[in-house]
Length: 213
Length: 254
Image (cartoon, rainbow over all chains, first blue to last red; front, side):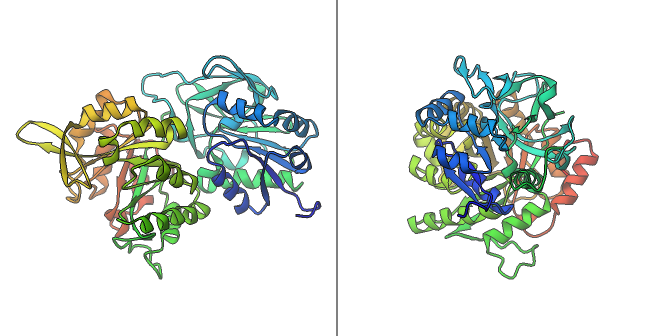
């Protein structure tokens, strides 16, 4: 693949569901490379952190593969970074899942268990409706739309980073943004046409066809 | 706001082909799983379930190939299963792109399989499938295995509870009393399950008309309703169904 052609590095740390993420990126027309090679991560135009599974074992694998530094460096260089589901949660300071585990620390906030409120089963598994609080290229396509969630933990963070949220007894951030760092709690690769709009917007950011406004 | 109620078309698959004719689609080749899945996605299906009825190993490998092709073209959750007896086939199904795999008979003979699957892939990826029939003499719901051909001594709600304890993240419960009748879902069964089960429940068996869905959501309190023939034969359009349920006050993804 030539250097001029933009591509997305999908972080390979043994998370599940990677195939579906790769397919969604391919569907919106950008090459994606599954990689744990720091040089490759830093030469990519955008980085995706997929994720299904548990916080601690994910962080253990990130450390074992020495992936934290290249991801942080890519973030510092201003490359669009997108974390999906657990991948979004990893962007924050820490999680209380199986004791306290430190995350990437790219966005202030912590990951806590969804409360088992009356009428709200845990995990949240299914389609929930997005309320947009910050309108931009990423959130415009999901305004009032349903997207597909599967998770037992959610992010507690300052409102300034919450671009979209869903109501699940508590306010669950569904899109978080801090500068070039983006997280989606739902699975855009499993949210039908609406989810593909998110992938398209991210691909447009990566290939410099769109900016986050 | 609660989650949207899910409408789930089910597709029987044999040797990598959709069988039991899907004829509302006007497809040139009705058995093509990719075209069928895309059509259902575009019609508004919230999720798809693939039931593998292949009896051979070769059938299983074409099933894997099918899931790979479907998941490249369809971007809604996919559940697959049928005859899954070990971790290796669970892994193959999930790696091919299915979000969830369901276990039925194999879980009855070896419940540890649920725990192992949940540990490896997460509870959200493991669905407990139960075929249940009302036992008139003993006045209880009884679990059947091997495609509904063999009765077990298990009582349905007890077994459902056990499956959750072993780690399933969702239950897909088919009532053999109502399956194929088109006379409505087995509301009483889902009411019983609702009292003790805290994972999402997918109702299956008996859908014939729009009001059957309404009843199973409102009275049966299920999270999702699965149906096959009413969708395959175009007797119920998914978009119409969801609009109707929405107008009755249910949360639907329109």
